[in-house]
Image (cartoon, rainbow, N blue to C red; front, side):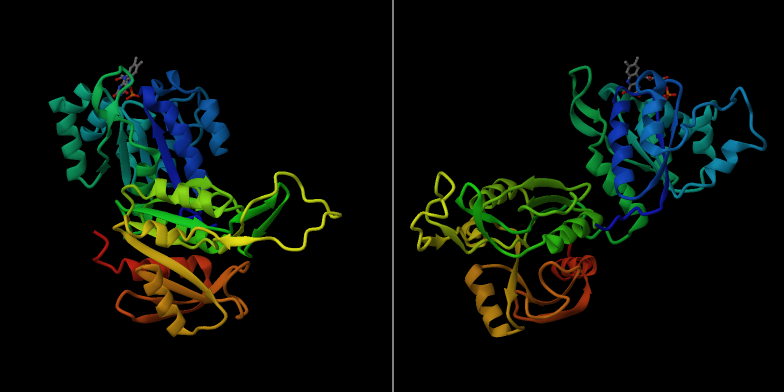
Length: 401
Ligand SMILES: Cc1cc2nc3c(=O)[nH]c(=O)nc-3n(C[C@H](O)[C@H](O)[C@H](O)COP(=O)(O)O)c2cc1C
């Protein structure tokens, strides 16, 4: 699956907050998305998490000492500061915000922050009174004035059980800020997108099922592309053999009925539903409770229509629905009829009789029908590219907010 941070050299500076342990998950997430991560820690931070953990997660020594016992040649903190594409101070204490705003450089982390020549994101975590303290406010405003990206902390219950702004921002929010530094096309920042992917399995008995040919690759590519464009993504996946998409919440399901339930539960506050899953059209009327034996006189399996997810959710869902249609050809008349019948806003048509398109392969060739009946063809390209193009059609530049 595409890794938006492939090869990016990122410094994560961990400071002495009770939330320091959450930096472990941030580091792991960055690594999953292909970043080369180095961690620097203040000595206070080492009271909260051991450097060994970060060394293991990153594969690099952890930078702590400004004046190590065995000094190496040159001025290592200056050399190292030039290596990074991005620095993230996470969690950022009131103390480090104050130091960074006043050019204080009395340990390795604060010295690096004075030297770094790359974008710096601060993800604050502190008591709500520390966050409200005029000295902290002043530091935050100064840093922002110089182009540093100081995130708003989350609101909620703090470590002390007080409630207010000061919680370490959700990892998902920090990841959006990080990706934004490398990709200005964050068309979908602030959006919530639900994507379905893969086949469903409709049981005949405990060991047999009716299913569709679907690898899930198109849906997974859409989830990754939506994530890379800044969206919060819920990926509802039938059984596939793909790795989860880092940074997306994945809900595994088996049957069409389970997928319907997961979609209904996920649509709350969602802006877009993309139905890339190959949901079964038919299901056995009843699954046999035990394996049907070969010797039994089974002549036929009674089928009924499986739930139509789009038609079921359409009346109550006010957001945009993108449906997929797998056809024998590129007949747009039947596609237009399907768009209307389903009540979808966009229909993405692909053809199973074309080589290099539809299921199982890494590429696709699609036609996108818009609500006003326009047809836009996207020639054969990787599913990652097709996914980006589909999202750009649904959210043309300037329309996302
Ligand atoms: C248990 C405990 C939790 C703390 N949590 C925070 C915190 O979440 N945010 C913060 O700004 N300071 C917090 N502090 C205070 C900092 O650790 C203290 O200001 C320290 O000097 C920060 O050092 P550093 O910025 O060099 O890491 C905490 C202190 C303790 C003892």
